[in-house]
Image 1 (cartoon, rainbow, N blue to C red):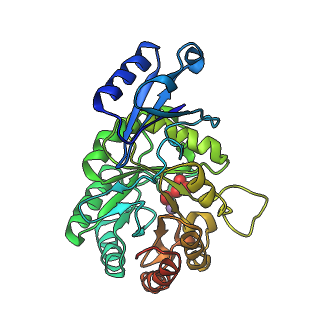
Image 2 (image 1 turned 180 degrees about the vertical axis):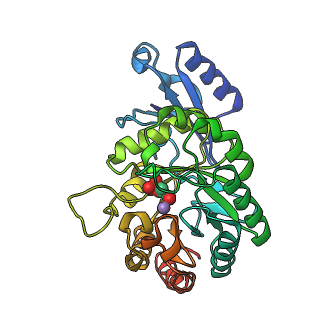
Length: 338
Ligand code: PEP
Ligand code: MN
């Protein structure tokens, strides 16, 4: 349930209420907004039948939440979450955030060349996997620590933020020391131990949707991260499995407005993995922004035919620069900045 406090509720009233909630064996999660404070209550709510919280001073209303997730729900935080990345960039506000780069970090020179071009075109965040979740154990698995170092060095050199995938809790410290945003991949969306660990991290997390997961399961996975204290979570729609075989996956465009309605978390669209085909990436990127996404995650490579991973879906730097111009017009049409 969610306790909505009156705009003029005093600190004393809030403390009194929080104390009472804890005494009932429930966990209060406080969210202080500009206008009012909201308290999410986690735990067995049956005890509240004998102790109604509506009667406490400072309380405006108590809203039961029917959805199984609480902290990620829009009711918990009616205004959308804005995740600050640094003093100039944030995800979830009016400006869109574009994350671009190769699927995998392959070597220093290639990463630097791609980073320079996507930065020039207007991308804010450099993507690149150092730990790759490959279907085959014989495929390139990533440069691991060396790849993280390249990401850090290159991003400093060109002035970008970074995002990389974390697959194993044992690599969390290392990843935290090298990048700005932690990506949890589609294949690990329900790796609950990993979710709990990144929930303890101070870094923003981009949680990709599992390829066979419902929106509810996806939001419950995000709930694991928020429950451990990390509220800086963005959700990335990257396509789901359907009967269609012309594309690698099927981008669930519905998910964008559905999530916007049921959750306060920012939404990112990945037109690369969802299509699997570079020629479709521009159209789907534009569709994502038109549907209300807060940003995009796009694979760009200067030699896609030589890429060690996901070449067929990687667009060339020139096409990316042209796309950025097209996206600006779409952004303006839907009231966003780019
Ligand atoms: C990736 O971003 O390179 C990736 C592996 O994505 P996903 O987890 O969506 O397949
Ligand atoms: Mn990829």
